[in-house]
Amino acid sequence: MLRLFVGIGLPPELKLRLSLLAGGVPGAKWVDPGNYHLTLRFIGEVDEGQAVDIDAALARIHAPGFDLALAGVGHFGLRQLFVGVERNPALLHLQEKVDSAINRLGFVPDERRYTPHVTLARLKRPSETRLPAYLAEHGLFRAAPFAVRHFTLIASYLTKSGSIYEDQQDYRLG
Ligand code: 2AM
Image (tube, rainbow, N blue to C red; front, top):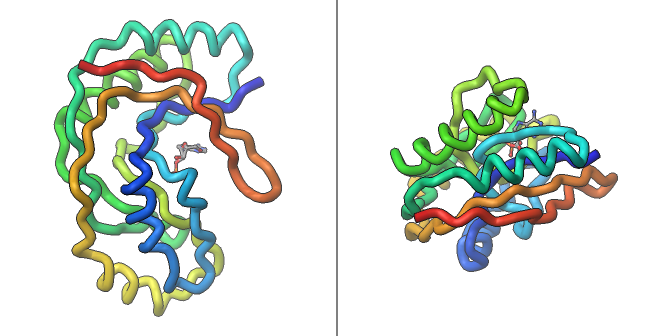
């Protein structure tokens, strides 16, 4: 079995820039900078046959390439801290195509509305007093846009020391 998701990788210089946002929230478990990514669609555990079908379905997707800018910081409740994405219709168009391709294979759609984000930290016993200060301090964060020319099928291995991600296949855009 493989635990799969579809995502967009980030250029090394952007990962470096994001890594400077780590720190300053007691109780936060910061994501390893090598693991930063933008999820398009989480799939979950699949067998080999399903993985082959997923790969074939993703390979059939045609969508244009686009530029993507990360901006702002936000949080999902007291669970997760993230960097946001500037308004980007082309990203949402790609996400919808990926989402429908995976749904058509019979995987259960996520009920939550898609909120593009790059997770910076998972929060455990977060300091509720430090969180607003962190959000205020980094609210104006904005990184230079980068060119998205492919998206990726990624395997996630859960280990005691955190997730390990392994790119399985890239799919060209444009
Ligand atoms: P997250 O960063 O917001 O946690 C691999 O786990 C990727 O899939 C992560 O980027 C994670 O998003 C995303 N994901 C979405 N739904 C998930 C789920 N139900 N379980 C685990 N990861 C999920």
